[in-house]
Length: 150
Image 1 (tube, rainbow, N blue to C red):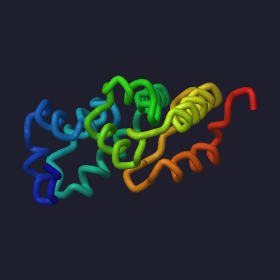
Image 2: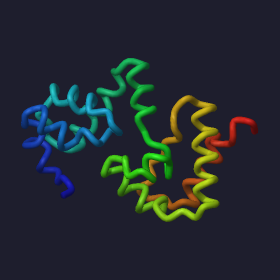
Image 3: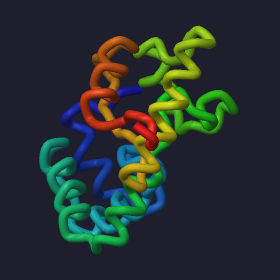
Image 4: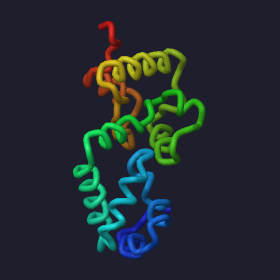
């Protein structure tokens, strides 16, 4: 179920393991963000909780930030095909139409994913919640996902 604003004080007062189980997936495979943010709770609102988690990332080391970026899966990549995404990523990619790509579209996503990682050292990241595959591809190409040889 989705959290309501009134859940924040109760949730953030829970033991760290329960808190992390509830919100640890907000930052892709980076439960450390929730673990550290928990120490500043309890939070009076979801906005305060979200701000604390953002501040946790802002105050983290460059290495931790890079690891957080690298923890993101490729859009329509191998993890999605294998079913190894987090529940949140699976749902977001499915809603964006990335679960039903044609062979040609899948080849293009693979080419763009590989090119982006070769160029920048981490995967292309885009909040796909309100996007479709056309918007995602256009964003990918605009932000430099061209093949490394291009």
